Amino acid sequence: GAGVSQTPSNKVTEKGKYVELRCDPISGHTALYWYRQSLGQGPEFLIYFQGTGAADDSGLPNDRFFAVRPEGSVSTLKIQRTERGDSAVYLCASSPRGQETQYFGPGTRLLVL
Amino acid sequence: DAKTTQPPSMDCAEGRAANLPCNHSTISGNEYVYWYRQIHSQGPQYIIHGLKNNETNEMASLIITEDRKSSTLILPHATLRDTAVYYCIVRVFNTGNQFYFGTGTSLTVIP
Image (cartoon, rainbow over all chains, first blue to last red; front, side, top):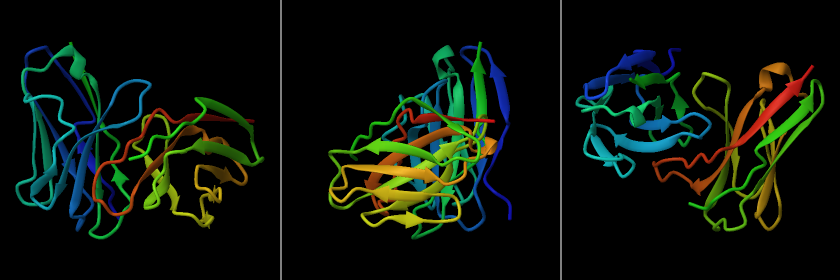
């Protein structure tokens, strides 16, 4: 079946601009996670959704970052007033209810010039 | 969640067993050991997890010491496609929350 998909695969933007990154989880998966991965580092947690609500957003670095999942399926990560330090691969993962395994998408590579 | 320590890099000859160590000396009794790997330019992929018994699946084996302070992931017959960064993670089962990935071990399988 289809895995987690993320769009766009690559995004280049200018400092100060607004960007949206989309995640389509595996159908039926109730949990959705966003991570950020900088070069040479492991993924770092940003936010976790259980259904439509953000159960844990403790990883969001500041209030420029926001994520939604209005219907409990697709999620959008929104970054306002982008900074060069936001450049990274943004990974999305989903998992079914009651299971531990997180299934990751290929990521969106964001470059802020 | 407990911290883990892994060597930054390892090499393994193709066809041989790859043994990837992980230290987790501060692991709690209710924390599981998970292994993920990340092939270049892809998202992380689940490999295996366990609590205290050794585990085996179609991808790998997980050996956890009796005191649970360390573990070893074994890829029995490494192939070139196993070249990846391998992450050892410890966390409480089914907390529905994040994984702390660390920096992992970069495994290179050599022809």
